[in-house]
Amino acid sequence: MPALTATRPATPHEGDKVRLAEAIEAARDEILELSHRIHADPEPAFEEHHAAAWIAEILRRHGYDVVHPAGRLATAISATRRGGAGEGPRIGILAEYDALPGLGHGCGHNTMAASGVGAAIALAAIADDLPGEIVFLGTPAEERGSGKQFMIEDGLFDGIDAALLYHPCDRSHVESHPLASEDVEVVYHGLQSHASSDPWLGKNALDALIVLFTSVGLWRQQLRPTARVHGIIRDGGTAANIIPDRAAAWFMVRSDDEGEYEVMRERFRDLCQAAALATDTTVEVTFSGRARTMRNNGVLAERFRANMGAYGIADQGDDLNAGSTDMANVSWVCPTIHPDLAIAPEGTPGHSIRFRDAAISPQGDETTLLAALLVAQTALDLFRDPTLVAAAWSEFRCEG
Ligand SMILES: [Zn+2]
Image 1 (cartoon, rainbow, N blue to C red):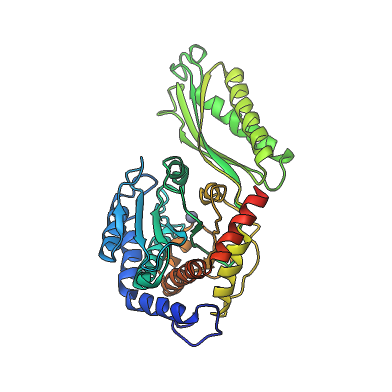
Image 2 (cartoon, rainbow, N blue to C red):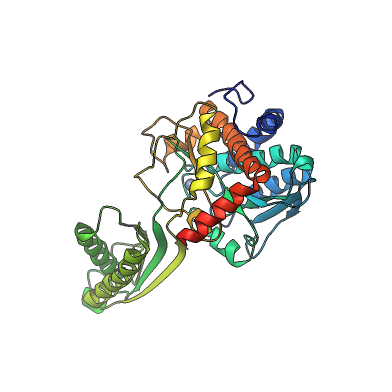
């Protein structure tokens, strides 16, 4: 990883880009301390109270007007800092900070929180010379629940001209193609009875769930390779000698195509009902946390790619292994990018202990600082060149 302030090929606004790098170097300890503190105290979706409070405190220290909580989510943050050089665009710097239940920061969102804050610190250091407004948005609940969708509905993205974020990965690439997705809670209700002396008096809710898993397994043969259906059993009964009267599962249904997703959603509901019919049980099916497909903004992507390139980091090309993200929902509201930078050797699986360890490794730390700088430099390009913002919006509108 090159030193942030090292000599490198010039890109536009080079003098200010060096000032951003110096500001991040000066705040290195503060940024990395935040990353490690969040990593050591993993909080799942909607419960990121410590992380949100720490982030809000640092932003206040760097001159931001901080609203926390922002909107309906207790752990959302909206922080703004006006530039001192008159009117201009409002550029959104986003950060996530939720962890995975039972795994901790296996998606490395601690590095996202710290890099988003780092970008905000760097831009604040030159804010007196910038037009427009820096808007930091702390966005909870990416792993489950699509927190950004609530923030969109709460108006927190209104008037934002571009949304920038970095996500950790085992490869570095600017554009990505996350799948439309939803969480599905499936609960079967049956009737308890003694599993040996009176089994004929019971209705087995776990059997219903097993039929559902079997149906989903067979269904997969007819799904395109870009579709996903996967789940876990959360409640399968309490004892082998009791016919379970309740069984619950958490599924996710995903597709790279919004139209196909709608069809899959209804088919999944039918499979749930079919399993209830087969076992004489009843079922509740609850969809939530809809994430959409991503509209990568080419104008923003090109700026990020150029800033990466100045540090000798090549775009390794689009990733075919896709998850889902609520950042995709933002991409339907304003020009958006979701670049990934490597914090681990290629082939390290996401949502794993190895990836969790990488999120506080020396490579993870250096990538966090570099991500802060690249996001800040890309924001700077937009603050300094109104034609870029106009071009990003024109692309957004043409494809909308
Ligand atoms: Zn993630």
